[in-house]
Each structure stands twice: as C-alpha cells, then as structure tokens.
Length: 80
Length: 353
Picture (cartoon, each protein chain N blue to C red):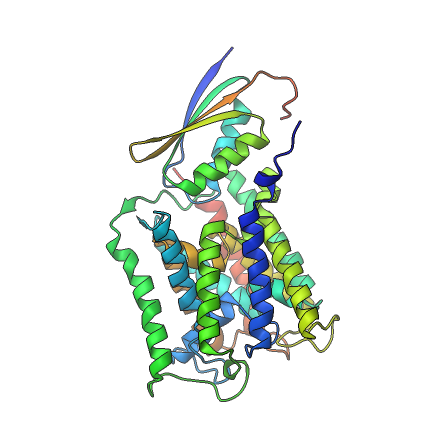
C-alpha cells in the first residue's frame, strides 16, 4: 500500500532535520514523504540522504522555504 | 548501484579543509604559536585576555583571525543570500554548552581545528583528544536519536545580525589603534603572532570557505555515525593531510609524544576534555568553527554559544581551570567531569515537544 507522510523540520538545527526525515523514510514501506524545510543547508543534507537511501527527490521553493518530495520505491534492496 | 562520489566527497569541503590545513601550518611558520596557526578556542581566549576579561598574562592578544573569519563568513553568506536573522530557541542552554565546550578545549589545549593541526604537526598526544572527541560525538548522536532538540528557531529581522560583524570590525580597529586599555602579552603564546595582514587575509578566506562548504569538524564524525555520510569528514581528513605535508615542507613536522609545543601528556584529560567538546558540539549543532560561521550568518543560537565560549575562556583562566604544558589543574578536571554530566543531563532532558 502506498503511504504519504509530511514532516515539518522548519527551524530545527542541524542535523535534526536529517534524523527526522530518515526516521520517516524508514517508517514508510513504499510511498511518499513530503518535507517542509526553511534552510538551504537542510535541503542539501536531506537530498544527500535521499541519494543514500535510493529515494527519488524533487525540491521546489514555496512560501517560507522549500518543499521536498521524496519518493520511496517498493521494498527490494533497501535495508532497514 | 552507482556511487555518487561528488555527494560523498564534495570538492568544496575538500578545498576548504585543505586550505585550512595549509594556512594553519603557514601561519604557525609566520609567527603564530607552534601547531596553533589557527585555533578557534585559543584565539577567542586570547581576545578575551586582550580585552582584560582574564588575567593570564601569557595569553592576551586581539587575534585578528577570529574577527576576519566572522567578516569573511558574513560576506560569503550575504553573497549567497544566506545572511538571515534567526532567533535562538534556547539561549541559556546554548550559552551554557558554549562555555563548557570552551573549558573542554582549554583542558585539552585546542579546539577540533587545533587538534587536527597538532596531529598534522606530528603531535601524537593529540590522538587521545581525537579518541575523546569521537567518543563525545558518539554519545551526542545517541541523544540526538533519542529526540534531543534545542527547539525551533524562527526567521527574524536582519538588524540584530549586524551586531557580530560590527563587533568583529571593532576588534580589528582596536588591534590597529592599540589603545592602552587593550592587553598584549609580552611573553608566551600571546606574544607570538603572524603579521596582522596575513592573519586578516587568512581569516577572511577561511571564513568564506567555511561558510560555503559548511565545514564542521564535529559534523564530520557525527554524520558518519548517523547517516554513514563521509561528506564533512573529508574536510577534516584534507586539513590533516594538508597540514602534515605543509609542516614537512616547512621543516616543522615533529613526530612523537614528547616535547610537543603547547601540549601536555595527561592523556586521560585530553580524552575527557575533547569528549566534552564533542558532546557539547553535537548538542549545539556544530564545532566551535561552525558556531562562529553560523553566528556570522545570523544564527541567534550560535551567537549565544559564542558568548558562552567567551565567558568559558574567562572562567577557565580566572579560576585556574585551563591546562598548561605542565598538566591539568584539579579544578579543570572537576569541571570537565561536571561538564560531561551536565551535557548528558541536558541531552537527556531537553526534547522538542
């Protein structure tokens, strides 16, 4: 079943945004995690994490920051 | 699967680390204290002494590297539109952690940058510090995983962010005018200084590069432990290799445990001092260098941490907590252990609700 989850990491200091997003991605078997971010550094760190976790990502500017959409493919290769 | 080497080892981080290593060695060769071409903690401590806020006569000088680094970072952040006002979510905790981190560095005798430069100069006594730094960071990552957070900052006006760069410029003005109320060491490390313009130039460049690369010595080990990412650790490695090679070329590489400059052989206290630095830095969100850069680009929490570091330096020297090549005073040992307990208590109890 495809899941969708939103994680708001605005205002959190490094590296807490990455930890929250990693936890969310680990909790979703297959689906989408939407992340609300307000700092460029956090965007860089989260998209880097997405690369490590083999998730596709799309980032767009929105009011007050950025909205990153991470797509987690179905199980098969991704460890816990 | 393809490995994205550029993400794992960003060239800008490697360049920033390498430039830091080279400049660290060159500034020591040009007159700064040995294996102390750049030290964020020692140099802040020297400034505190220069302003007369501590009485250790051997470590008083308005080190221009620190204000120049602040100005370089502010400038780089402004050019990248990252110079923004952000509130401090937990100012008192940031101040306290900054003070404890500073005391930890002064028990070890160096911040993570100088620890790396000491290793790059062949000083193997710094290995105990590196081990402690890693242990402190590891403990910090456990607390982060458990949910530690200082809270959320909010965007704010840019006006308050002018305070730090203006103060930095003021320090440089005082250094050039040398008024009678500023203290300059006549002997000891505080009397050893590279030419002012070389220090200013190096500080500006390092500030800009550190801002651009997000270089963080605590973040390097932390991110490796947390997300298996070496992208910041390569900066520390580059600084170490570049410093070693430059020191070898300049004939100031001295490998060994004994006779190392401005260092002691109380390995347990080197370990525990840097464990305090590692743990405090993870809770703050970055090492002293990163705190300075974040404060320069408008982060209120880092601003509080910087003032905590200044206060910590004054306390460390006025209350005889700081180490010397002779060893670590009992007071310093007590405060390091107490500091570790306080950091663990803060990390355990402060969580975002």
